[in-house]
Structures are given as structure tokens and as C-alpha cells.
Length: 331
Ligand SMILES: Cc1cc2nc3c(=O)[nH]c(=O)nc-3n(C[C@H](O)[C@H](O)[C@H](O)COP(=O)(O)O)c2cc1C
Image (cartoon, rainbow, N blue to C red; front, side, top):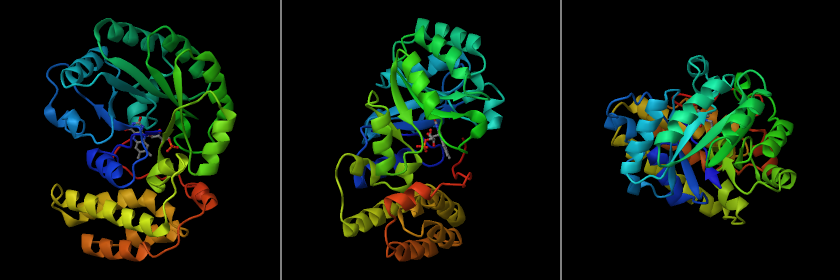
């Protein structure tokens, strides 16, 4: 079970607090690094992933780029810092990224993809995996993309079965995923819309070949989901205790980093936008949290929130329905 990357949310403090208070993940993917350039990488670009020993759960660094030299530099720099694997983002759907042929914007250009991989694999000594979608504008783009990926020693392919123009709207395309699973010779990981235990079980039944699952918004909403999938159920009292400790740890860490109180509560609200869904009346819970203006008022709202009943499996399955707004810094 792997944690999906979320730029603006799942940076190091979140990942480590998650590992301490909830656990259940075997690996975590760090949000993408971009604009590393061709010279020496500025240390601030790598502060989320270095030093490697700071990661409480094994972590994979991710890069977004269409410049083979940048990818090589990123790979070699991280190799020197003890990493043996990098992930390449071919899935980010946001227009200002995709318009520059980055993220899923590269998927309509398989020849370019081929050239980049050719150059990269000639020079890197670490493993390379990709996180991708079915396409940018059309789900058939994955066919040619898969042909290209099959020509290289890619470590694994994480596939979110939507196209870029959908962003997170509509249903995941499970037929499209099944087709790619057949055509791709690499180890494949499923990612998309696993919001509760029953959805996970349905997908597991549908794709028995898949042994590794990447959880995104489902785990951000219910941080108990990875443990639950592994058969560990916590009491409600224990869950409340852990949510409070997680919140406190992130708030305290944020205080050391963010001096502006509004910005500090803003960063906590980005987390609670997702995590409110673990409560039965998640939308109302978040409306209350959203209106707070200071960290103190936010704490008070969280204390009240923690007295609310937890959401059922079905309620969690519906929390993101019809909601296309996703809070984070980028992506
Ligand atoms: C706010 C936000 C930030 C994201 N940042 C990244 C990122 O840095 N790298 C990446 O590969 N995917 C990123 N994603 C996509 C997620 O990792 C994941 O693939 C997506 O949410 C679908 O999985 P899910 O349905 O389980 O949430 C981001 C998504 C959102 C909503």
C-alpha cells in the first residue's frame, strides 16, 4: 500500500506525522519537484526529500520535467544522497503544466517520450518508475505510450485511469485500466478513487493481478484506511486520540515554519478539507473549520469536530462526489 503524492499537502511534515500516528503505508511518494535546471540543483528544491534518513516510511522522490538532462541530474544527485529510485510524473493534469508538455501533457507525444527515455536510460544508475494517466485528451493515447514504456526497463507504472482533461471529474475508466494492464509488460500499480474498504475490495476482485495499490484522497480523508485495508480496526476513542495528536503535531511544526497566523491555519485547512470527510457530516464539519481565522479558533473547531460521529463506508464513498475542487498548493 503506497501513499500518493499531493503537492502542498503531503510534504515531509505530513508524511512523517502520518507515519507516527496512523501508519499502514509501505511507501510514500513525495510531491513532484520541478525546475531543477541543468547546473547544480538548489538545495531548497530537495529539502522535502533530503536527508533521506528523515523519512519515517520509505519515500520515493518524484520529478516533473520534459528535459532529459534535468531528469539525469535529479537522478544522479539523489543517487549520491542514498536514493536508488526516482519517479517521473507523467500524470499532472493542470493546464499550466500540461500545456508545456509536462505531466500528462507529454502523453500525446510518444516520440518525444521515447527520445527522453532513450537519453535518460543511457545515463542514470537508479531505477525509474512513472506515474501516469490514460492520456491527456483521449484514453487511447495510452496505447502508444505503453509501446514506448515497454521498450525501456521501467521499474513500475502507476496508472490513474482518467485522462488529463477530466482532472478528477467523472468516473475512473476501469476498462481503460484493464486494457493497459494487458498491454504493459511492467509491474503495474492502480491509483484512483479508493475512498473506502468496499471500493478497495471491489477493485481487488476485478484486478486480482494487482498487488500494489496507491491511495490518495481516500487516505487523506480517512487516515485509518490503509490500516483498515490491512485488517486493523481502531476504536473510535483511539481514532479521535490519533487525529488530535496528528493535528497538534502538524500545527506545532507549522508554527516553527510559518509566522503568519492566517497562512498557518490555511495550511491546516488544506489538510482538514480532506480529513473532514472521515466524519459523518463532513461537508458541515469543513464549513465550520473553513471559517476560522486563527490557529486558536481552528483548534477549538477541531475539538468540536472530534466529538462528531465517524462517517460510514458509504458516506466516505460519497464525500468527493460532484466536488471538483481540490485543495493544495499546486498540481
Ligand atoms: C492537490 C493535489 C496535488 C497533487 N499533487 C501531485 C503530485 O505532486 N504528484 C503526482 O504524481 N500526483 C499528484 N496529485 C495526484 C494524486 O497523487 C493522485 O494521483 C490523484 O489524487 C488520484 O488518486 P486518488 O483518487 O486516490 O486521490 C495531486 C492531486 C491533488 C488533488
